[in-house]
Length: 116
Picture (cartoon, rainbow, N blue to C red):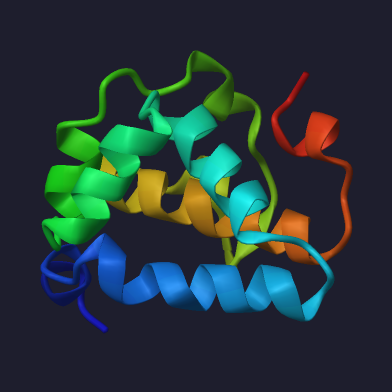
């Protein structure tokens, strides 16, 4: 998928996949929501609004209340690329989220996922 095409995908269209991946490994939708809210500064209510409004990834991150400054501590490989080496800001935010969901699915403790 090209960069332009992934930006035009809505967060709502990918969200069920995040939840399914987490639930398949014994985690919950609430865990996924906590991660997304931690990363973006959304509340549960504003996250639900973004999902209901079919907000595109690019807008979702651009309009996030406050991206968590600790997200720079997220490192590692996702889709064969080191997250910390991604130069394009929106793609880096998308991959941060992907990495956090992967960590959740791998059974990592929430405290570690949220870089506490």
